[in-house]
Length: 469
Image (tube, rainbow, N blue to C red):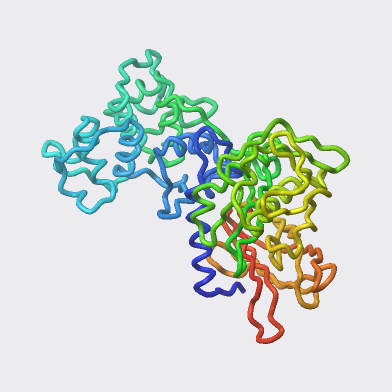
């Protein structure tokens, strides 16, 4: 039986779901595994759903999170209005044409559609009603699209055998001639199914073809490429501390790509979530040339601005971000730093000695590493059961407790793990939570030390992760 955690977790999960929605990739960006929506994975129309989402023609069906598309739902007339207004960028109008759409969130778009001449109404000859909640049939959809896109050519072969009695037959044939529809009974496709409702998944394909968009199917979790980039995370208390973020890529991650992502700083979504990610790397810092890796040592050359500013905590944090980002690669154990081609042995005006190179242990006790650091999973990483959780901890009796929560803040599973050594030293820990869910969703991995004094949770680290069924 799942149990519900308190308000603190509700706030985190609400932020997590909202960030996931805000972080939906732009059209030119690689799609994260599973894509923009959680409920269309494997759907025949998923590629076009992603295409129309990238164009902001659809935002989703479960505001404000908008993590679902509801592909199997029928399209209502009011939804059709919004799809077409966004697709064609139709201007708004001050005229209120219909009496039955007052209060509809789509009312502005309904009136814009009427002003454009794409719709007249649903109760001729008066046509003072729009019937906003009525489901659009496939033949009605054909009429909407023919008017919207101005199709005039028809198919001389009378493509379909089941639309002969439809008043929209000419529109259906024009839609087929334009290549927007191929039929409803593949592979023969001699039927159009004019009376069937238009599903939201089908609507994405109709609009995608009409707009000549390229369908883009997102990668699977098993084949997705990502880089682990370390920023500063405003948690546990006393932070911010080092924490990794998963950045998904079209191609395989390289040290150069990871460092460039680090230098670019957190995304708007990462920096606005609660708890927030930030960076101590000065804005405008650039990488000079490639990164040489030999014998487990990476030599990276950055612009001189990397040591701008002051404060030992700030300087150690930015060095930690660079070191942990690079040592996330299995081939790298240590980092040597150059600034504008000059090897650095004493870093910044704080006089930090890095002549021996930088490894992860260099930062233990230096203020950038929390008492519990979760390395895997990174924030927003896509995980399947069982999850492999790794990290380091400096805790009493080497014991860390953990919970895995679903998108509603309910406990999927919990337990404890032991680090390889207890305080006052950092020890490594690994555990493998298993869970069972039916839908892809944002969950939270919570890891903490239970206080020997009062049983409270100390050094709490919460990581938002995508959980896959």
